[in-house]
Length: 212
Ligand code: B1M
Image 1 (spheres, rainbow, N blue to C red):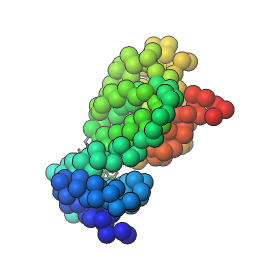
Image 2 (cartoon, rainbow, N blue to C red; image 1 turned 30 degrees about the horizontal axis):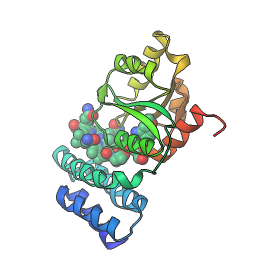
Image 3 (spheres, helix red, strand yellow; image 1 turned 180 degrees about the horizontal axis):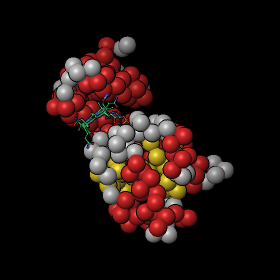
Image 4 (tube, rainbow, N blue to C red; image 1 turned 60 degrees about the horizontal axis):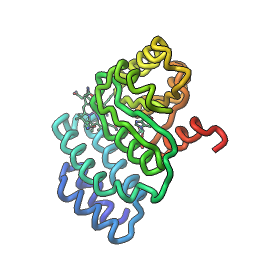
């Protein structure tokens, strides 16, 4: 692994916000592709933090400082993830479902959608089905993110609420997040599942313009 990318990886694992932000700047200046920084530095580091947590080698406060360090790095990376001069590709409302406070994946999907020309309304975290329903009239696609097995059920609740409010025919619903699978998406009646942010963009595009 490139030395600066390794520094970003370790900085996130250790929760060093300033170091991560500076290292991302340095990596970009040195010509390291934004995708390499994201995939090999940042996402790999968060996976490592998850592994350490699972094995009892780190706890919630450490996960939180790692998340803050990743956020500091993402803020630096965001402009490089955006394409230039892109037309609006459609409107998306995105949020992390009720009971779930994880926002990094959702933020990444939002950034990539914006980079691809979508207008995105970010509903935040711990978003109730009612809030998604209220946003449905303004957008073409609703994106639901969940990181906990215990909150995945809120995706189904949100789909049910959209259905009950008569909004389901006019809006496409896509789902994603670490515990979510294609099969789960199918079972709850979502319009699509994406394993990562790039695939979420491709999915949203294909749902809005099926021939694209
Ligand atoms: Co939490 N946490 N956490 N956590 N956390 C996980 C998810 C966990 C897997 C860790 C572990 O045990 N290995 C575990 C869940 C276990 C389970 O449910 N099976 C867990 C747990 C247990 C918890 C708490 C319950 C811990 C506790 O309090 N005892 C608690 C729950 C709080 C709550 O939400 N109510 C909790 C809290 C936290 C923090 C607040 C400390 C912090 C979050 C900070 C924040 O987000 N602002 C945190 C973190 C950082 C993690 C890990 C380490 C990293 C998550 C992350 O940011 N990944 C995580 C372990 C892991 O995932 N390996 C873990 C980076 C992010 C870019 O990836 O979100 O997967 P991800 O997004 C990906 C894809 O999933 C996809 O695209 C992204 C990549 O391109 N994607 C979508 C995501 N959303 C999408 C939507 C789409 C499409 C694709 O369409 C709409």
